[in-house]
Length: 297
Length: 179
Image (cartoon, rainbow over all chains, first blue to last red; front, side, top):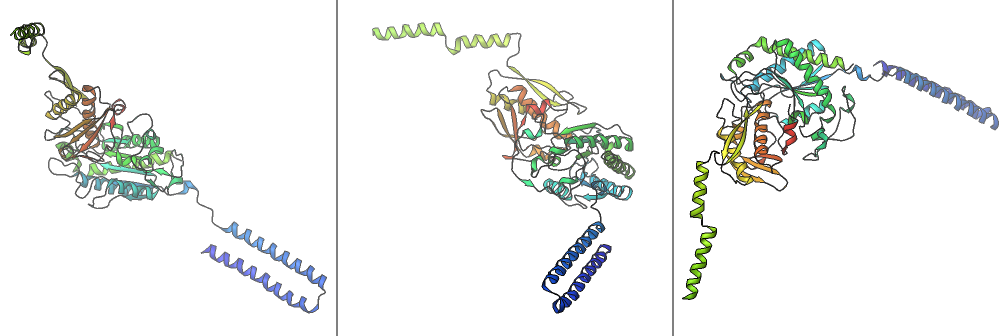
């Protein structure tokens, strides 16, 4: 609004010059000699040019400064695993993975928005089935700063398994880029300049190699998340691991998968029914987001 | 007449020198059965440890001289049959092997029934244990196999239960790099 008003003022000043120019032009046509007329014309044009330049420089100075990269409000993408007919793991008494993940992601999102003032995008907000590709695409389109996929998977036996965090590791050698992708699809990299972690900008990124530039920050965040979860839920956890997780492969930002623990275990299923436990887990996620993004500044 | 006698003599001599299956074969079988070593060859079948933090192997014996195809199939059947110790099965006993093929590049294509994914308990870690047990069991018992492509109902799939990327063959570095 302020900008528009000032622009209008400048236009008025420029019009004033034109008015004077026009007035003098009328006088010249009736009384001046040809040489004097040319001289006046040159002076008038020079004055007009100087006035316009001055007006332009004044306007440029009044434009708001472009926002600095650090001033951008971070966007955190939370991915509640499973959904719809994909129920995921099921506890001995019927607790479903898809319900736990949605509850924790929703609560973590609320904490991140309210306490940290960051933007939060959820890949699903209800019991809908969202394919893995759609989850990654949504995350990439937001140009997010962090991606957290939340799960509560089963285990081979009804044994207790506490939380784990995972980052992407191709498991095919030293470099994931060493493998040829199975397809040649690419996605436009809208969030190219928004990344806060290590990044090697490239104009086109193969869909299958989207995570390639974020392996280190993803691993760092997986460790931070693990530490915060351990502090909040007062459990030791099972560790931080690199695995070729398909969803993480497609995400173009630091990305991790959090497995809250084994739903197959009756004792742990009971724990996951406890709202206070889930609240602490959500707080651990929010605290980890804060800690990680603070490291980037 | 003379030709007939010669034929009988030559044939008898050859039979005596070289032996026929019923003779020396019988003594060989007896020797094997009564020998100190058990017959056949060993396979190492890899299951999950009780704590689900590693793979542990169990020994199985199979007849000697199996082809790579037969060794691979026998190995997988033993894996599906499950452990005989307190180790944990990584593949449901309901799973069937629909097809198995080993190409000349060392890639084993294993086509499992859909029970492999349908009966899986889920979880990234459990998926990893299942995939690694299949890969390690095949690579350990069939030297010709360098990598394994898992198919379900004849098709490549993205994941077993929603986590690990199995669109492409798993190779031995997958085992080496496993942490």
